[in-house]
Image (tube, rainbow, N blue to C red; front, side, top):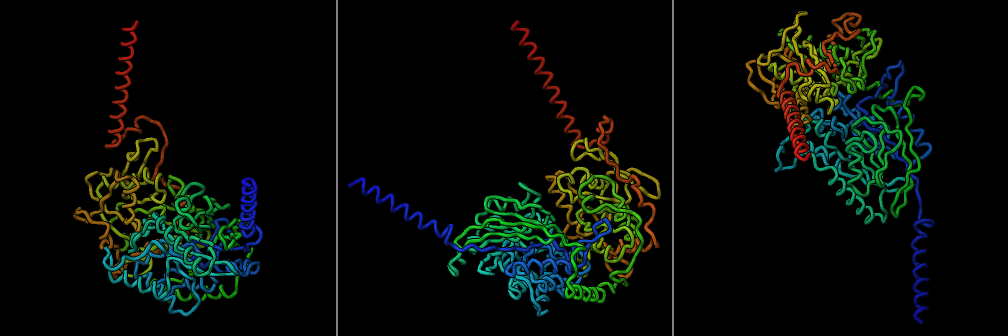
Length: 636
């Protein structure tokens, strides 16, 4: 009898197991989800030069690729991972006309998140952009943002600007996540900002909440709500502006490891192109590159009972092989006219106006990030800042600086237009509320000038965006010297004559507002070992928050914008860029030698401490050796 019961229980268990397995493997419906994605579009409505005489990107071509994919799957969704603005002249209409969001709506984007550059025009600019988008009355993408939000009433930093953003969020419908159904598939789409993204938005006015904890809370809430309302588990997509640099690296890789329930992360911020997705547990991470270089396509199998499987991945190049969508092309041309009338007219310039002919192939942005060497392009930009500041104020500038992190594009070979120059230095807004970061002029001691060069020599290895290019100074460093004392020579260049930078001297320094504000990031990246203090003309220290009080202004009192400084400098050259930019002039010398004199020349505290440490280590070795020899002799 007992054997019969055991047999019956076994059979019943098998029947139940089979009953549960059938829906999972044979009876349960399976859907094919197609997700089209972009990120880091940066207002590049027009194609960009590829450095080889061709072009890539452009919204009219991108729309053609989107339509082709939707013809194959009408239920495909289209999403963006942030930084859809800031990077071309079209951004100048950001706060007033919201050109980027409006054209994305016209192209059929379903959802997008914010990137750090959506905050470049400060809280007031963000609120203005959202309200302008709503006022346009046209189609718009949903906006999702879960962890980068204005301070609430009662929190530090709350004020009228923060409340204006909350009001604009409510009016537009910005939310932490979105539930949407398409072709029988329920999607939960949410937005996350990363730690580095926050660090790159010094005037955002937002408060960063922990990305992983926030993401887990939102995923759990969206899944529970979708199950309660629709009886299915959603396909969860995270639009993350955090970034990844490849398998095992980057904030989005860490996010996928820490958070359960994310099926797909569209990873923006680092401008990464992933030829193959990264798999972390049950999460796939994808990136398609910047400036609409590619349209990303992900295919997933989806089961309403839960679970997804990757079935396809493709990056479709957006290049000259694709015809332009006529409606989007016409839309962009109208936007150009608006930019000329509302922004460029104040500078007396046109969108496609030619400034100069360039016979030289300058470094790409990737070159500026990737190498320590002197750059003729970096020289040109820093020379332009020095020239423009001296022209505007009539005061001598000792040192002008720019950094790889603020250079957005190179200048093309051939005709250089106003649009090209703006794209190269397109970030931010001034205290005057007019687009474009202005130049600022402060004073540094000679010791701080050397520390600024040390940022390039030491910190840029940890933070490539801090690679510096300068005018007015000749600097030399050796990469084999002690960290934070790699610079062994720094001298002023005045009228072709070199003179030593004196530690206690006071020198007038010009840079862009954003570059100046990011000096704090260099201090953090050096673990506080390199600190640079801006000062006024009397040598009194000033705070980073007060840098706007030191904006360079022209004779009319107008801010001298970074991009306009470059444009004016090029115009002043005549019809052709000066031959001095055909090759480096030696102002930045980088060596990797082992010359003992060079390795210890002009030591600072770091080298002295390292030398003392080596001496103590050598002494300890000698003493230990002698003690060992004595013990050996005694034993014998």
